[in-house]
Structure formats: structure tokens, C-alpha cells
Image (cartoon, rainbow, N blue to C red):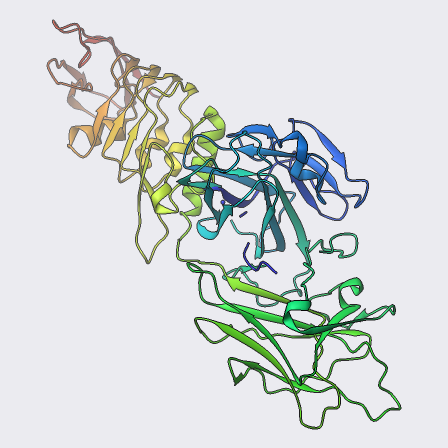
Length: 558
């Protein structure tokens, strides 16, 4: 059984709790995505009655392909007939939002990969990595055109493909299955577990691989009787899986060996599923055994499989760390029957060394992306993993705090419309470059709330209105480099309240201060609003710098 497993393909998978009505599930809560299918398409698998939808609403990069005609129709899951390949970029991410996922809920997530010689380059080496959110999930190695691969995890939803340089990453199908919170108790918000019969035999659509018992010297046994789940069952293994089992041949010990794959976190969770399929009532026979890990007693309880009920043995504590493992089911001395094993699952802890970006920054960057329809590698988490931050941004990373967006450059990015206030939600932002776009309207006052802002470049847009006073003051005191040339900007349009006495107004522009205007205005009674409107001043080198004073309006405020 392959115990390795989207949730970010680097290929990256990300789950988010914001609303997206196009990402819907069927009545069971199943979401099954056929990657590479035409946008807007859907179908129902006649064998499983599972609905498939196109992946177009979950990702905005990649190229659709069909697998080679010789392989079409040969699969036990129809989603492998098509795939989405990612020839460009090092980061490509599927994002699954509500209502498909709910924050804090538990899910089984599975990604399928079937090469099928879609590009006619049979024999090439293909290797790429998977991330779930910000953390490494697993590697995918494609050895031939015929074999399908899948990676599976049990995880909780919180707040892409990574090209490793060996061929073009691709993906064929993504399955999302909701789980009861009581199932798989070792999986929680801090720990994701990595993992045939399928649905409808298994109501939550796990893939159960059939293990060949012949080379292991095991004896196959089975029953036609229904094997039921126990009350408060933590795993709900289907009857069809529990109706078959193995016992050792001429031995009192059943051994499961395995060697951990290199590069994985060495924390493993073993789940053994056992059921007595022989009616031992009224006989002198008994079946009792202990479980050992590399010769060490794993759990102190003696295992007595329940008759025609799905029993299970597991621990919330990972197995002891060893370079290799031998799991032994050892019959007790007074047991007349050898150990029995109906099924087992082996999970490993997913790496959680990467820290997600600040939630406010994620929301702000997502809003900016959607507002301006930015087509970059802006998928998944903006700052994490640290080696694959979004294009055009810089982030701070440390061990104790979430990464923060400190610089954002969208110069010459074709932005249109007004400057969204979402930029002001990037509270750690120091540099913001929006130069040479087609932005219009006023400069948002909220930008002045960015206390760490050191550079604001709005050059080459079609802005109007006034520069917020606080930004001008930051520019005057040297804490902010402010550039707003080539826009119809009024540098002052503020009300200043004075009781009496002369007031000197100095016109302050952006860029080189080659020109400055001073006007002396006497205010001798009560309160007045001074509105100064400035035109653009052109220097000898045909560049714009500080504006010339154009007109002044002095009006009394009641």
C-alpha cells in the first residue's frame, strides 16, 4: 500500500474558507475534479455515480491535454483520460474554497497522476513535488506511461506543482472527501496524515489496495457474512474490505516489513484492522496476539478480534523512530489460532516546518489579485514556502512570526481603475510601486495609515484629486519617498483651521524640488478653509517635478 500522498502543485494545493459558488460538491459532499477537462464541463461516472467537474474554476495556469489514444478507457477512474500540464513557472496551485471546504473540518484529499504519453515523449524522466498549503507533501516520480500514481492525505482545512527540473509537472484528477470529525483522531489542525476498493464500497471513497499474499507466505481467508462497524468506530472500514484477511502459514507470527522512503518526516502512524471471521463460540479455539515493532511491544493490550465486527488497533503517538520497520503480530502461547489481519493503513506526518503568511496579508493580496485580474504565479500562500514567494513581492521570514509582505511591485502590469484600499491592509508594507499603469481616480487616504511605508511610486498613471496630507508630511520629513508625476494631482485640498494671524503655505510636490511656491494669506477672524489647486510644472528637460501654484480659494467655514 502506498502510504505517501493537494493541498499546494509546486504543484501546490490550498484550502481556503472564502466563498466561491462555482466550487460546489454533490449531495454527499464529494468534490471530484477532472483536471484538463473543458471549462464548464461535467459528467457522472456510471459505475460509481460520482460527479466530475472541470478544474477550470480552481486554477488559472497550465495547459489541457488528453492521454494517448491507446490508453483511453483503460482506467478504473475516468478522470485519468485527461490531464493538465504545467510547462511554465515553478509554482502552480489549485485552490479549493467554500462551500467545498469548511474551516476546521476534516477531509480526505487525493491527487491522481497518469502520464499516458500525452506529449509523445515516452521514456523521459518526470519528477516534481507536491505541497499542501505551505508544507511539503510528497514527490511524484513517473516511471512509465501505463502506471497511475496517487497521493493521499487526511487533513483539516485551514484559513500547487513545484517543478524540480525533471520534465513537465502534470495532474490528472483531484478527489476531496469530507470526513466525520471523529474519524482518524490522529489527524488534526497541526498534523496531516499521508495514505482496491473504492466508492460505493467505501462510503468515504478511500482506495484500498489488494496486497499479494503469496510472496509473504500468508494464507488468504474470507467470509461472505457482513462485517459490521463497532459503535463509535474511528475508521468505519467497509465490510467488503473486512471480509477478506490473511493469516501466517505454519507460523505463530505475521510480519509486515517496510522501509521508509528517504526525505519523509520519520513519524509514522499505524492502523491495524482486525475481525474474527470464524465463529469460535462453543469451541476450544481462541485467537489472541500481541503487536511488536522491531521486537518492542507496541501496545500493552492483548488483541482479541471481535467476531464479524470491524476492530482496530492504533495509537495517537507515532511509532518509535527506526531506519527500517518490522511490525509483528505474535500469537500468545495459549492461542490455538495464529494472528489475523484484515487490512492496515500506514500514515506519516506531513512536514509542517513552513509557516503560513499573515492572514490579513493573504486576504489583502487575494483581493488585489482578483480586483486587477493579475495573471502571475499568484496562487496559494504569497510568502510561503520561502523559496517560492509570489512574483513582485518581498517578505520577511522568521521562526517566531508569520511571514509578512514588505514590498510589492506591480509596475507596468496593466492595472486599470482606481487604487484599491486593499493595499492599505498590507500593514507591514514598506515599498509599494504601482508606476506606469492606467490607474485613475484619487490616492486613497488609507495609504497614509501604512506606518512602515518608505517608498510610494505612482508615477505614470492618470490619477487625480489630492495627495493625502499625511503622505505629504511623511514626504516632507524624509520618511517617505513619494513619486506621483504625470498625474493631474492637487497637492493640497485640505481645510486648515486658524483663529488669527498670517499663514504661510508652501507648495510641496513630488520628485526633485526644483520649484516651490509660497503664498502669504492673512486670516484674521474665525475659521477658514484654504483650498489650493496646483497645476503641473514642466522643467527644461521636459520632466515633471513640483507643481506651480495655480489658484487659491479662501472660504469661511460657519
